[in-house]
Length: 334
Figure 1 (cartoon, rainbow, N blue to C red):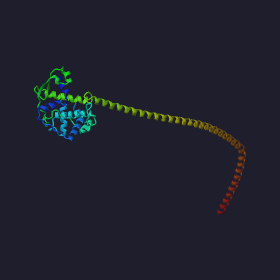
Figure 2 (tube, rainbow, N blue to C red):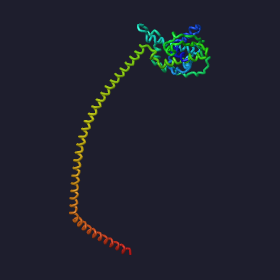
Figure 3 (cartoon, one colour):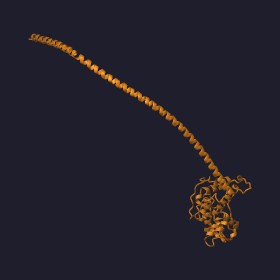
Figure 4 (cartoon, rainbow, N blue to C red):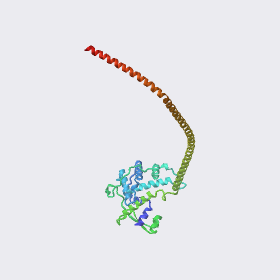
């Protein structure tokens, strides 16, 4: 079982479909329109999580995409996988042609689309689909071609499969189900192949020119980052110089304020002295006033006593006159 899986992983994802096409010449392959191909690529990139590498995940992932596009009765999941592999193969041939071969990528209408897809610029460009349950009715989808079985010698097996199988003869199950496990093994190998391609895209499977281009782009990006950092550092240095100048100005202003505060302190001390002098002068004036008042107080009291005596005599005379007038009035009445 392990030998079969390793041998099939080493093959392109569409190899078994090509063999089936040769054995089943009457199989109908639906031709997508340009708009359908664009939607097909965008859905494949935006829903990469469906190709998890688990058993039957690739099969149901392609069925989910085809059902969303309304093509599940016109294409089966193997044809969809073959279409995707053919698009990637054509893109790589135009992106990294052999040395000495001149190509015009723009001659292929889907080059820019696939370039965006391979560079990850199409992530989120299509709806995120919900995976179909594995117990869905298979009759809702176009069936895959009838499988057959043949034997392949070690001369037809890739080097990776030779190492895994010890260069022994291996059986490749194309479409048959004679032992009841061929379909499951084939689907599992294809799913593993899709998963490895998703994880390892742009590494060993890419040409050397593509790797060197990636390294060059990474180096350019690093250089741009270094230049940006140098600019930012120069800006920080200028800001620091400005801050140093401002700090020097603030130090000078603080020194001036200290001198002004010292002057104000001296003036305050002078005012305190002047206030003490005024207080002492006021005390002296108070004492002089008290002394003068003590000298003139007896004379004032004598004058006041004389005035009070004359007032008392005049009051007594007035009372006497009023008493006599009352007596006269009483005598007249009687």
